[in-house]
Length: 468
Ligand code: UDX
Image (cartoon, rainbow, N blue to C red):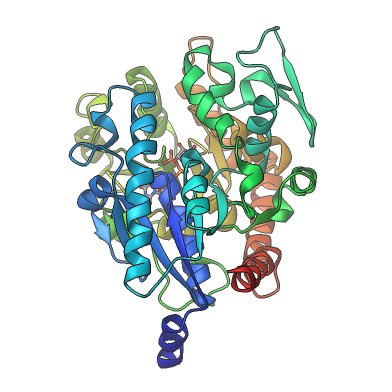
């Protein structure tokens, strides 16, 4: 079987160059999609920045990786003066180095047929056109969020909002949403240049052959049907390894391309000693920075709640923990009450039978992973698409609650404790826990043979083979 699998991946039908925006939350889903394509005999080359490649803590994947440059080879994004300076330079240097890579691959006898690009880097379409290649925009966020940015692009939603809209009506999504539930860049006047990049995702979208969405049809039927009338949309998620879903791909474990080193043994050994559904998993993803006051409220809520917890605190956030928090935790309750780690193997954690709830910032990957593994959520969105994802989790899919901020923008410890209790213990949380299980089943079905996302990936591959 392995020989057959090897032969199938070596004699490929087409070659896709995959270009993610260089942050963990965009690399993960594009890598998982790549593995699905590879299993259908499409050769994959992922192009990422020299800086990121140099700084990868884990680089163990079956797909080829090549370096391009964003113009900041030594220090990465942090070296840029501003966000705008970063994306402007990336466009210039990235277009050149991506072109050189395409040329190099052609010279080596393995020409590229298609560029699958992150629409934050929409200049990739021009590179594709220059070489006569087909292209696909890969939206890493869900379709409701994409639809909101689309309507800002069209001028239907104003930026920054002019009136005191309490509720915003968005064509294609029948539930009105509060102004506080739209992506942060839409309502924050300081984010003027960032919203520009979000709306620019659509500026040359009429030139692409496919628009791929990191979601699945059953999750967002209404908005996907609506957007499909405008763009050639294909939903291809959930983008998590096959071993957590349909189990059809061989050797398809964790992410394999990571700028953080997971503390795998510590986490799993600890979880193995906890009772079923007893542990709260807490993580704010790879980018969010919490206010020190918020970090303290969260720390005390975890310590005061009657649940055990596994909490990911990235090393850059650690100094915000209350003084001696970790030491006192160990002293007062041995090793049972809580474990704080700098990074964990999140999918293995969410899949673990001891996990009963996920306190999350609602990054789209984390949300989709919790949906796929049937874990109910307490949401504490921070910025970007997270408030919208939290709205969907609570009101549309009914698989979690939102811990609300006070007027200072801080979620207080009592509120967090109440939410944890509701989701993990109370009768009121029963429907949430049951719904989470239903979505898990659905996620597995859509990825399995003949499921909506599997069919879309099949169709993508056959059209790619025909036109390239
Ligand atoms: C960013 C944005 O913030 C998010 O809102 C957007 O939807 C995608 O890009 P990030 O904040 O990192 O991503 O959050 P998220 O989308 O949840 O991605 C984090 C990824 O890191 C997930 O795939 C998660 O499994 C992984 N992770 C996180 C780990 O593997 N270990 C950890 O300890 C924490």
